[in-house]
Length: 193
Image (cartoon, rainbow, N blue to C red; front, side, top):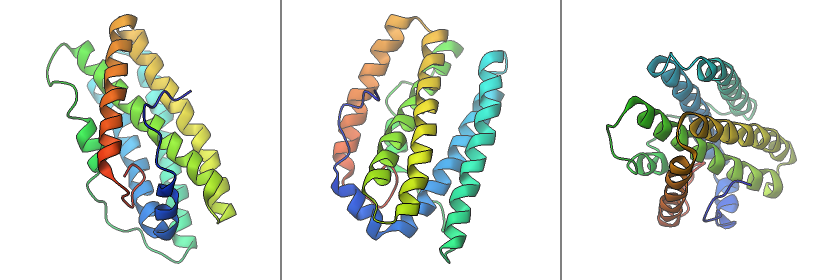
């Protein structure tokens, strides 16, 4: 369903489980950045009323996810750590050239967002299936379902606003590029690493 060209190495879950404090902090900031992305789309493309409506809902959902992860961190006797650079997203954002029409810029941003949500969904599925902490596994299963919805929503909007054939070509090229990124990142203690 997700169309990812390279699945996550299952050993990543072992690294995540051994470094769950780092994973939870990184996850919290991923949720915050997802909310920021939705706000940015509203600010940058206010004339797309149907997109704005969905982004308003998404901002609320992503901030509630941030709160849920933050609450988990507190419940575990930890404090939210500092945000770190996300090498996955930084590398991903270099794929499409800068510039182009407003529509082209919007399509690229929607495709990036779709792919980040798809990879998050895949990682959350692994955590939901493999974590020894059953409460945490259940938490990630719930979020996995949400991420799958976000992925399909962003991809739907990209296809709605752009020429379907061109959007699908860009999507497939981005998927190929993302596989190379994932292969090169190794086994970092982050949601996308």
